[in-house]
Structures are given as structure tokens and as C-alpha cells.
Image (cartoon, rainbow, N blue to C red):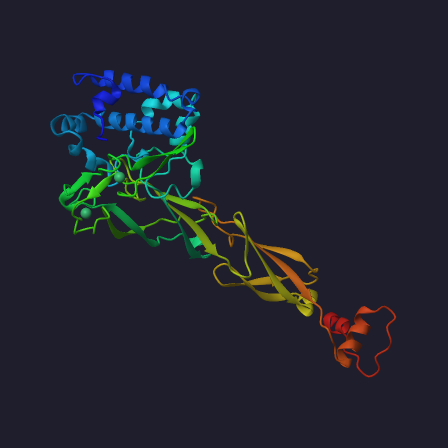
Length: 387
Ligand SMILES: [Zn+2]
Ligand SMILES: [Zn+2]
């Protein structure tokens, strides 16, 4: 089963104009409406794929020219070792107005995630069929970086088409032939007769393992994979005030497309390592501190932990338990702003669990109305403060 001529597939003469090619493709594509295709959707999809491959080559003047001169072998390296796949299709926009009316198109193009096992975001994200996959990664940073901002460097894997073999995996890009078993489709039909019924199954071609191609001699540069792995270092900019879990997008630094088409994007989710004593709520930070009873009663200073380290908090006399103090400008930066939120400190007044006899005497006199007389000692808290 040899590959059909692209002009024949589209039903246009070799002299057809670009517009005639496009109109023919649209007219034929419309026939793969679900009502028409529901008899055998798998076959319908294969036919639609054949149609789209023909259009992909003929819609581009450069590849059409090569095809006119050299036939199928002149363009097959455009599509990578597996032959034409939907990730190679760069003309979804020519069907845009038809997409809404046809669930098959939506299924094909709406879930398309690129060439490396789909988009890391699952099927929800609409991507152009020709794009490479996005890379998603997460990056841990100290919480202080949310205040100061930072420019971390990340290393991402790259996998680009091998240059010498043009991504085919075959030596020089030419030591390759169309699989004779499946004629390049990568699939074989098996017909089983069971009495009066015939069971037709379509499965992966065992000879080429679904690639549609047979490599005669492997490319020594990429060892037949068609891909070169490397890594790339990218400097990111984390602005002051970035939210925990926010995502930075670096356009064009995802994986390369397998055929023509632009690379995917890099998405980096930034996660700040929490500090045990700091809770972030928008631009404000919350912390807690212990205040000894004496400091709460008489006033004084305590050390509180901040995002940067420590600060001294003045505690006024008579501070009540669970009072909140606000250290202005010690919170997180307002995003892209020059000011910072506040650090809100909750004061836990520490009540001693045990007292000496002497302390008890002093407190009884000072704090209990009609408390027992305390004998020899006269230096009560009240007297000391009033003298
Ligand atoms: Zn095959
Ligand atoms: Zn190679």
C-alpha cells in the first residue's frame, strides 16, 4: 500500500492555486462531521489525517515545491521519524470557524498537547498543534526572597531535533524508507472471519512499531532517536512581593516542536520555604511572641522574630494577653510597589506556673484586696512604684 499522491488526496490538479487547495481541504474536512464519521470514527480520523498531511505539505509553498520536485521522500523528514502526526499540523487556524460545530475537531485539536506525551497541564489548555510541549517545574526559595526579590538560575532539559539527520534518526536523514508492511501509516488492519461476521481490528504495525518508517542506518549523532538532549541555564526574575505558588512564564523556553513550529513555554512555580514563626497573609506577616508577666505589667522590651531575623518590640505597661502589635513596614512588599505591609505580633503573656513564698507575699499584698498581712517585709510593689 503506497502512499497516495497529495494532490489526489485533496482532489485538486497539480496546477491548483493556494486558494483552491485551501477550499478543497476545507470542503473535504467538513465531510468528517460526526454524523458521517460515527460509523467508524477511527477510519474517519485516519482519512482526515491523510487529508491534513496533504494539506500541510501543499499549503506551504516551500514544501509544496520540494514535493513537486522530489515526491513524498522529499518532504517526509519534515514530520520526524513517526511520519505525519497532529503535532505537525500548523493550519488549525484554517479550520477555526469549523471547530465549534464539530466535536471531532475539538477532540483532535482541543486536547493536543504537543509532541512529548502531551501538555503537563492536561487537556484543558488549548495549544496550537504545531507547538512544542511546555515545561513545568517548581522552584523553592527562602521566604526572604519574597521580600527582596531575586534572580535565580534554573537548569532545564532541552531536547531539540538532531541537525545532521533532520530529526529522522536516520543517517544523513536519507537512510530511511517507508515501512513496506503498513505503507507508512504505522497501522495494520487485521481481518478475522468468524462465521458470518468479519472482525476488523486496526493495530500498531509490528514491523515499524507504529512509526511508518524503517531506518536503514541509524544516525550516529543521535543514535537513531532524532533528538539531541542538552540542558539550558535560564536566569529568572522573581520580583519583590511575589505570591507563594505564583507561576513565572518564560515564553519559548519549553521543548522544541518535532516538526516546524514554535517551541513551548517554560512555567516555573515559585514556592517559598515557610519560616516556622511567620505566617503570610497577603502583604502582612503574622508572628507571635511570649511576654513575661512582669513586662506585661510594668512595660519593657521583648525580641520578636521577623522575616529578616529579629526586631525589638516595646511593650507598654498594662499590656493585656493576646494584644496585637503592628510593626509597620515589616511585612511583605506590595507587588510591584515600593512599600511593605506590616508585621502583626500577637503577645502571649506568660503566667508563671510557680512562685516563691516571697513572691507570693508581695503579690498578695499588691493584688489581692484585703490580702493577709505580710509581716516583716514592707517593700510591696505599690510602695516601690509610688516612692
Ligand atoms: Zn509499518
Ligand atoms: Zn540524528
